[in-house]
Image 1 (cartoon, rainbow, N blue to C red):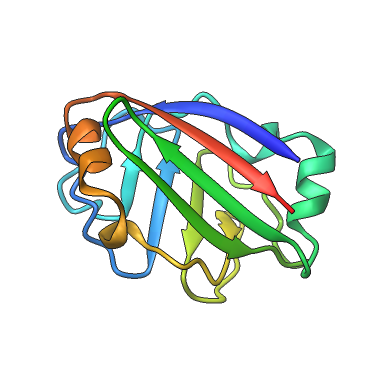
Image 2: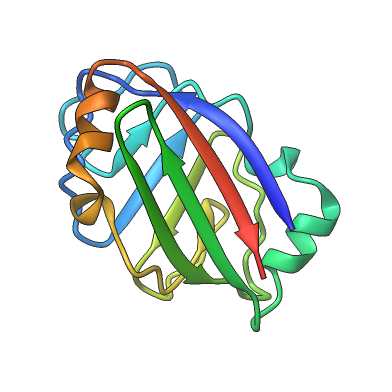
Length: 137
């Protein structure tokens, strides 16, 4: 099962966070928002198809997120969980930890913001478009 949406980069993308990365519907971020890699998302968790949300809430689901810009690409693998509510109105967070809240899209991710492809991050600092593909297996 796949779902694709788009966001944009921002000059304040630092991608320095060691345990999460985030895409938000917010249009502006400060320099301290070191986990946010995409802003102005055209989708929020509530917009996901019900079938996709059900798959994400399965503890046996493997979730892959592909991030793509003109010059960069990365893939992150993590897991779903029944306690993921997928209800936050603006933010989607992928976590290396097992912490769960309304913002959490996946847990036990194999990468955080600091681990992402640097060409991807450089494009995002230039406000390039970010393609986000979610694949649930």
